[in-house]
Length: 267
Image (cartoon, rainbow, N blue to C red; front, top):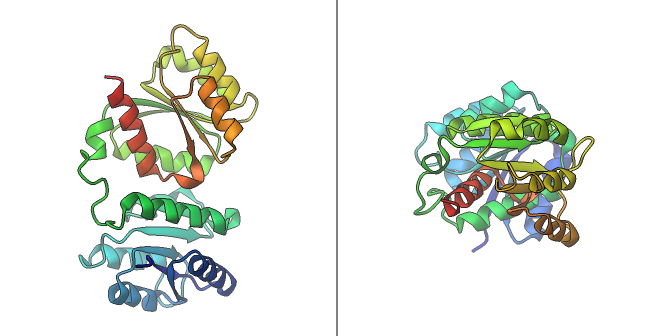
């Protein structure tokens, strides 16, 4: 049976684009252009996933999320936000209300949304209300770990910082490779999450320097990138990366699970 996606979006062009893309990809896509109507459709249709705008007529996205959170019949349906706002306070409010991901319209790529949705639904195997299956709660697996995250995207960094705080991790955030290399010996993180596209020294160059340093070479490094070229993946492996994750195909819960898996394998 086709997965059911509810799109609550009043932008005529964007709503139609997303609806058509999901239908062509084999999903059952339902479009609502009104907030109150969208909430009603959630209750009636019980979709597998919801794409939700914030600014909507009759009822805004936050009001919908708050009402959804209080309704046990729809509370666990995953939500991805698509918004014009990328302010940290807005993102934090959405995350507090349980959203799984957050896209900014100014940086919007419909295909990236498709990749995220497909990856999320495939990971959950159709059972979206019991995230993680029989695994331990993620927090139990990574609590107390020190994670160095080298990332220059302020929007993503804000979300990462909040997520790791909820997982009871210690975050060392660096916006460029030179900064990370200057503190890594002192900080001795348990794992390093390294973006490839960075200002100045790129992630491959940083990885090479980390692996040539006897004091930190055994710290596992995970490369994160929007690049998915086979030669980039092979280059990362050759330089000693533990794993190579594609940002567009990985949500934060999945990344935290990967971190936990790597750290548990090294015990």
